[in-house]
Image (cartoon, rainbow, N blue to C red; front, top):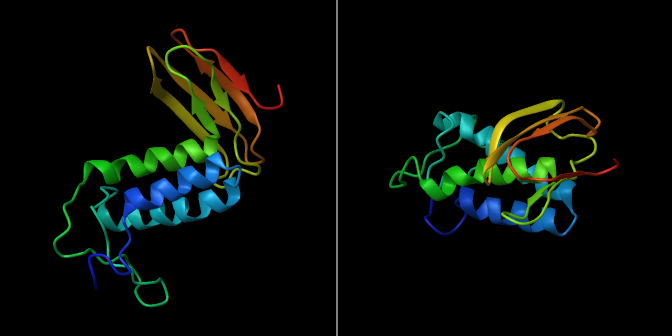
Length: 149
């Protein structure tokens, strides 16, 4: 167990997820993001600052790093970044459109997002298992651009 060698930092993983998704490599981006969300279950979904980097072949549940702060604000944002990658969500607040280009197929299966705050409004969206957007409702001043529509 080491603070800098082999530990998993949720915010660091989120940076990788974001970068890969922005580069168009959504499938590669989502894989570590989903692993991170799975690990969150071992911490009551309250991400710690870091966790010990033992593999699933070594331990059955994530191992907390003893001195890590939990919860940690910058780590908590990691879940939002994973959702952003799955939805293919980009937002230009306040002036431009909100764009949805979900991963196909959806790595989370069918997905419903309700009351996601964006600017002065909120977004509701339903994604089918195949990644198509089935329903969108946006309030406030946002415009929504959906891939394939």
